[in-house]
Length: 173
Image (cartoon, rainbow, N blue to C red; front, side, top):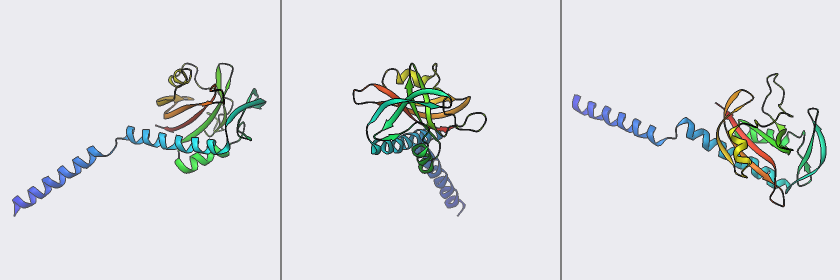
């Protein structure tokens, strides 16, 4: 009788360990979460129409280009980024290219004072901008305004395939 219990306990332990190895680790789970959130953000912006730059506008005291998806102006418009977070959690941002910088024009990433970090720029020395400058997406760990995140960044291209902005989603670590 004790042998049957020992075998059953050993079998249960082996099944538990096996199940744990099949489940994604926290890093893998966050990667999957980031890619899912990016798909939501991308589909929401695609639904609005093609991206374009038209004119300039003030965002947190900075004069920057105005980014549109279709006829929907993104500067200072938080509807899309907030809907992404409602559906997927985390944070979301839309950046516009302004000179050599990428400026947050719609975000729910918080600044140190707790307000939306609009008007702040993507770290010009960070890993993400290196990929964006090569016209490539970036997925991985980054530091945003002194906080660690697992994140995804994808270039926004206009009709002539020029990078005019960035879509971002991320989860604080």
